[in-house]
Amino acid sequence: MNRFGKTLLTLAMSAIIVSPAAAADMTLKLGHLANEDNIWNKAALKFADELKSLTNGKIEVQVFPNESLGKEMDLVNGMQLGTVDMTITGESLQNWAPMAALLAVPYAYKSIEHMDAVASGEIGEQIKAQIIEKAKIRPIAYFARGPRNLTSNRPITSPADLDGLKLRVPNVPLFVDVWKSLGAKPTPMAFSEVFTSLQNGTIDAQENPLALIKSASFFEVQKYINKTEHVRSWIYLTLSELTWAKLSADDQKAVMEAAARAQKYERELFIADEQQLVGELTEKGMTFVEVDGKAFAEKAKDAVLANVKPEIRPIVENLFNQ
Image (cartoon, rainbow, N blue to C red; front, side, top):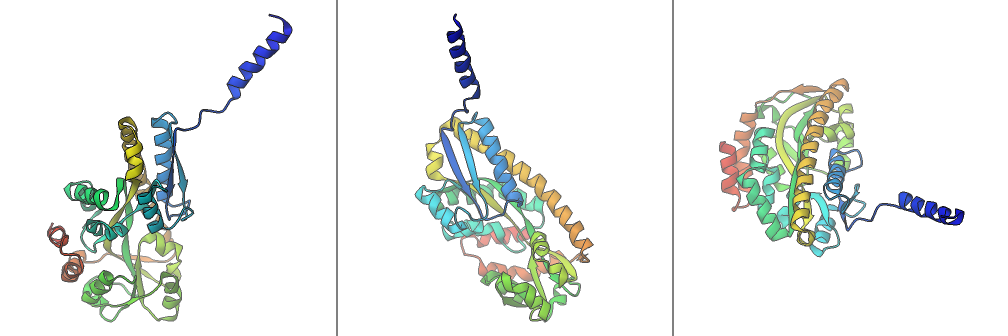
């Protein structure tokens, strides 16, 4: 081979070596409301990595945090129309599937183990089946959410301690009625107004997961975190049924395996995060208070049952009795 021929061969081989990898056959768009540091976003990125690996790069997932692809309901609607592939969503799906309300019923789940047994058991399968049928989106994994706890400037250990307590709650009838039944004076209020209202004494207390208690700096205006853990809940990683139908059987299997790995990863992050939050909030001067959870649940039961839809009431009643 002459010198010119060798040069051409070298250039050709170089082009092969540096050429980019073949583009993915399918790219899925996954939008959600959490920020980049949130463990849901980290789990979504884990799902993307695992699915790309399991399909040898054939399926890629683009993750859009911070509502950058749209708000939760916009994303669900987009999934139904086929303009969005995936999102992270939960009890909002009761707008289509009434059983989705079971994801966040006050005092229904006594522990994270109890919640896991329900979410991964027969009731969980019924919830998922109804969401697929009615909402046309498919839950493929679920992520834990930090339990909601009551903060205050006096320790609360039993319902009797709630007497006269002015408590901010979201504008949700179920929450309002449950806290009334427990003896508090619930006040629906936008979250953005809570800190100032606590500061000036318009309200005495509020309830939220530890992550929000920290990020909203409630430790500056509240002394106690009363471990009511009154709402334990989970949220789903979901895939559009239109997208699911486009996948081969092997690709569907890969999606479910990637989702299972992401779920396991999220749980590890969740447990570590909750432990870290306890330490950080304690360092900020807050005191954690153990409460009589059984007394709270028993007193709240009638109000909870009165507020849930008739079709899920027997299930909720059974959960209370477990």
